[in-house]
Image (cartoon, rainbow, N blue to C red; front, side):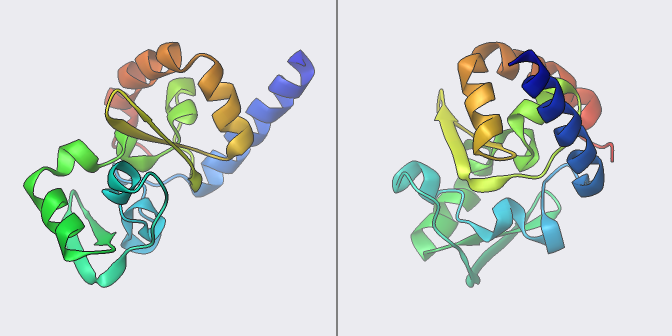
Length: 147
């Protein structure tokens, strides 16, 4: 198990270097949350693709929404709906680096949205997420504007 964890950590480190962005928001091609509606994770409890017809520029990225209602909710309170650590992997942030994410790895903890690199990483993160969130919160101050 320890050897698998070390191998996984090395793999994540390698991938995160390739996928890292200087932006404080994980936004491949300028689109936050991989084009998913950030509000829908809270209201529909699932990933829902957003539409360019319902877009909003915030924090240096374009955010897409599946409905005008979700767009308006986000406009009123973006900090409530935007994922933690700019949408980068919560486990990666806890480990001191930025990593890309997949929409199906989402979690809401204490009314905050988190993503992880993949489902295996989410499983690791879930085992001690309180400690990982504390660590990521501390690390994010330095990580936010780094590549």
